[in-house]
Amino acid sequence: MLFQDKVVLITGAAGALGRAVVKAFADAGATLVLTDHNRERLALLRSELGLTPERCHIHQADITRLDEAKSFAEATEQAVSRIDAAIHIAGGFRMGVTHEASEDDWNFLMNLNARSAFNLVHGVVPVMKRGGGGSIVFIGSRSALAGPADMGVYAASKAALLRLSESMAAELAELSIRVNCVLPSILDTPANRQNMPAADPDRWVRPESLAQVILFLCSPAARDISGANIPVYGRS
Picture (cartoon, rainbow, N blue to C red):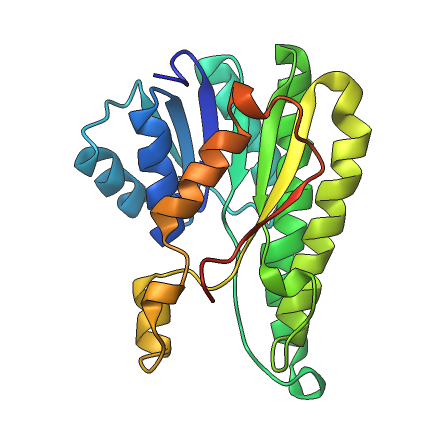
């Protein structure tokens, strides 16, 4: 029960990776605060894991909006008094040749992958400061390090997230708030299997495996790790 008496906030909690991360922290004893754009899926997840509303709080919020992100963090503090860890999973993906990408593609990916993180920390960091510290983990991408073909806008949005993570780690070090970013390659999700039927999913990263990396980064064992970009590539 490594996270007993700890409060863990998770965005994008109803997706494939979100579900794996929620289960990992639930198994470790954490009190959970979850958000997603679909409240019904969150309620179903809570029921499937056998968690009580007191142990697992759910919120529907659009964290691409600064006011909703801050309100979500404030509601969390009112309900459970603190935030010990925040895992930002919410994000988006679109492929496309860069010079053919639309303005909507740019706004969609920058909003979901970079602006949402910027908004979330405006709410989370003040709560962590009042609580004496905490851990923030962002979900980046291998493509943030080197943009592949047909993924220019996506890679740019994840690179922006990476730079935010590094700067925040430097800014918050004296406040005992650690900030790290994990960089997975392709995740083994139903959507990716459907979109890439000829690929070998055994070479991809399992959500449960990435969840354990995130669990470690939020644990006391990682107390001296901040500003790191952790590669999690599987065999892809």
